[in-house]
Amino acid sequence: MPSRPTPDAPGSLAPAVCFGAVMHERLVQAHNRFVYPTAFVRLPLGRLDEIRAPLLGIDRFNLFSVLSRDHGRRDGSPLLPWLRGILAERGLAAVCDGEVVLQTMPRVMGFVFNPVSFWFCHDRDGALRVVLAEVSNTFGERHNYLVHHPDLAPIQPRDELTARKLFHVSPFFPLRGEYRFRFDTRGPAHVVHIDLWDDGQRQLGTCLAGRAQALDGRAMGKWLLRHPFLTLGVIARIHWQALRLAAKRVSFHRKPAPPLEETT
Image (cartoon, helix red, strand yellow):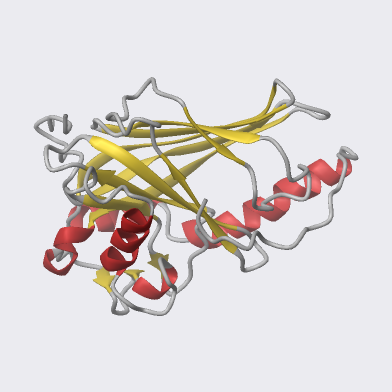
């Protein structure tokens, strides 16, 4: 069922800004853990043309902007038909006949790097059925992981969904193992856990969490004051953590060719 909004938070299918933190913890070879503040938007794609908020532009420049060319086909074409096409190809369209919510970071002053964006696909009753994780690496490549239950049952917060690792993200992990996802979008806090497992051992634990508030000028002003350089900081922090791992002499793995299939 869709989340029930609290008096100060929007529901899970409503436009929202979320403020929270991202955590990574490496558990093998050399322990390394970090937590950074973050923020992201949640945009119902069926109502994308209706979203109006000061400082935020949808397919137009502003201090914050979400551009179609940063997602999907990356050619500026509408996002929802692209996602609906993928769902139809995999026989998922009938169960995903409700709203699709894109969770991502917008461009800030024209720049963004999204390590991962999530497309939450719901049925007509608002239950979460399928999630597409749109993953990017620092080499300009991307890959989509499409996860759901084998029987297409609604995804509950404690449910664990798996995907074989096929896409190179970090040179400090080999290209093998599986991701295990958990999603809690009931609100007012939205939480995603992604763990990397290999050979029966958890290699990496990650968590992205943020508390939602209505997508309006007040929220975007809050973002500007708190995190004016957040998207630039993402790249800086990635390279800083890479230097830390290199200093610990963690094994380095060359980048393989990206998978031939864009969505798995």
